[in-house]
Length: 240
Ligand code: PGA
Image (cartoon, rainbow, N blue to C red; front, top):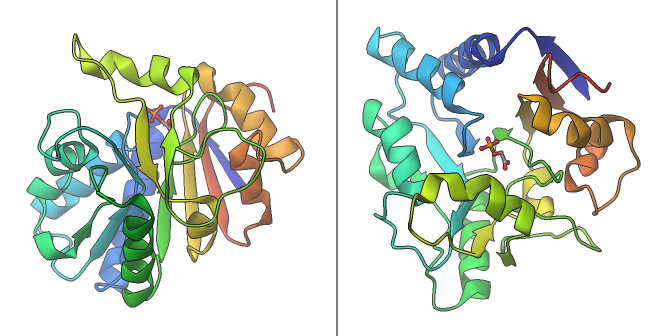
């Protein structure tokens, strides 16, 4: 793992945003694996500014998001579909048919998992996968468990994740299940970038980089991937 520690989240957004803009300029038909949450926002803001400045086009880019809540309508204000529309896609020239999400309301979750795996394969695989990390070491919604997962599956969210994400739900109840890409699907990405900011992530970051590879800290599996770059701010790096 290559670890880059910068001053703060804004600096990470600029450096990683620049990386994405250059990557899309060099590979206009690339396939990007994208993430939601607070962590990617500075990077997405940099990308939008570069697009608005006429620097880059996303017309031929394909995207796959990591996860989506179950039991929440796609157009609900808290769905990850809505998050991506509001924070990235509606500001770019990306084509709606090139944007891919897991369906958290699928009637058959196993068939939905197979559909997503086939769509990723048909697109030629994911070139660059963006990841955040949960306080409990989760990546996407792969929560600590007894075994690493492979393809997408329906997961029961842990209390740690429910506590962290329920701030976005105001008075509405937060879903307790999600569809998530599995560890195997994430590891098949050609390149992975993981961003962690803030002191609440420091313990998980230490385990991911310095600890044993274990499904109890799912991000630790990234030690086995050949091309991972981790971007940290000072707080997230404070226990290394
Ligand atoms: P966050 O979530 O970016 O909102 O901190 C990261 C994650 O849970 O993967």
